[in-house]
Image (cartoon, helix red, strand yellow):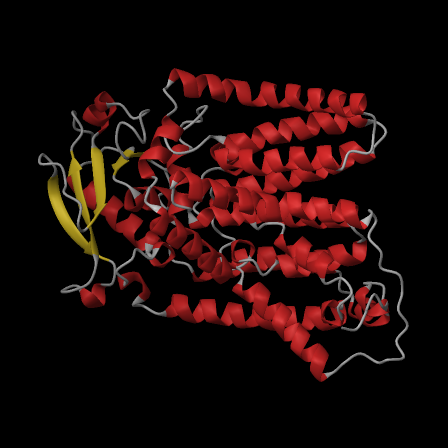
Length: 502
């Protein structure tokens, strides 16, 4: 393999300088480009976005499925700009852009700016940061806050004024737990990594960790109190949704988990493979001088950090699954592998295939193919007819308009409550007055029966859901009018308000 810490890897090289390209700006620009592109082609919103838009009507210390941090951030955005159907997508883009920036800073802090530049180019190919970057859920916020926690931890051990960085790290660790309880695993790995790599007096490390724990306690304690007072609803939901099985099932689940993770990073692997192939077909000139490209930290420390950020959490999660018999969830891989591009850029830092003059054109070409594929897929009118619910293909704006018109045919009262699940939340997001959604006493306990009795309710449900027996004005609304005989449809129905309105 040819060693290549040559000028081509540096963004100050003549070629890249002439083009005016900076890898970090390219990476962050691609995040916004993907979100803008997918939002343009999507007719609806993903279920995770809709869920947050349902919960944001009440900013509580927790919800029956998840901790509250993502909903709080969305609530803050709504306070600034008002409720809009595009807001969750925009917030996802901002969160992922911050994640990319912090990832670059982490790579620069651990290794060098050259390795950071290669890492951020590779980072754009993980599915959650590209083709799925418009999804706003707990993973979206978790990866951002975990990146911030790792960076502040690095600064804490490197800075002479440690107290502020340690406090920030603890506060961010608490925010990570408020995003998703899965954060406990990478936070534990981060703690172990800090201890193993510690090069300062033990007293100094313990003092810093004490400050961090204090910040964590201040942030997380109110939610913990809420969870205890409500009998841990999030944990009860997770345990009820978790499948268990024998050793054969456990091994099959682990295998399936990794197959799905390979699918999630397939564009990343394809980019690396094409770069290697081009490097073999057109090897760099033997006359190219090799410049220094050493890591900013000793090799052993870098290895420990890579194990702490990538290897150890994955191995621990697999071990927990095999021992406990619990099924691995595919979406857990979003955070587990968020630092994989750092490992690739560091591990292959001397490979010619990772020169930016080779890597960036390949990256742009593969992203262009991805843009074209997504537009083609979303342009297919049959996408919404798929057996599995195609969230982003739902004609949300038309459905919301039809539902509101159906309500207004029956009553002059304002629509303030919509009953149902995904379809109801999607319609609410595209109605200007942003009515509340009632999904049941467990999911949305802030909507009380007396409110429904007084204000009435419009039910919007998928075709296989049984409507309440006292619902009136039942109507089928077909997702594709051209297939009104055999196509999928949603149901409209309502209960009238207790008092008529003029």
